[in-house]
Length: 149
Image (cartoon, rainbow, N blue to C red; front, side):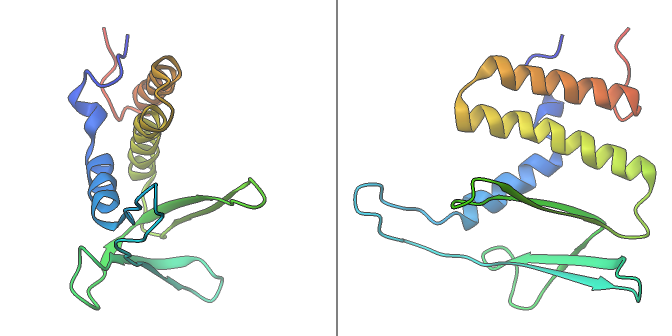
């Protein structure tokens, strides 16, 4: 059984990087005064071919990277919850060079980190563990993680 938060794999590199970005780029707000204490910008640059297929994806966070320096990546998933329409807006992109095995690992890490995000946001440990179980199942099926014997 996969127990949430008891496995080193629960804290994969993707989650650690996103958490560091969040910690550095979150806009701290005094809940009583709603005063913005800090802001930060995240920039994403996507280069497309003539068929609008991504050739390269690069990003930077103003607090983490020197001005102008972008880090390349092979894929990205961005989800925003629209405050007014109460709907999720998504951008899922990957470059031509992204291999199937890399996509399997990427999706596994997203699912795994989603369980952690859900737990932090809702404190619903039972459902967070169910998401983590599915992430582990997905990881086994795609051979990203070894099957338990």
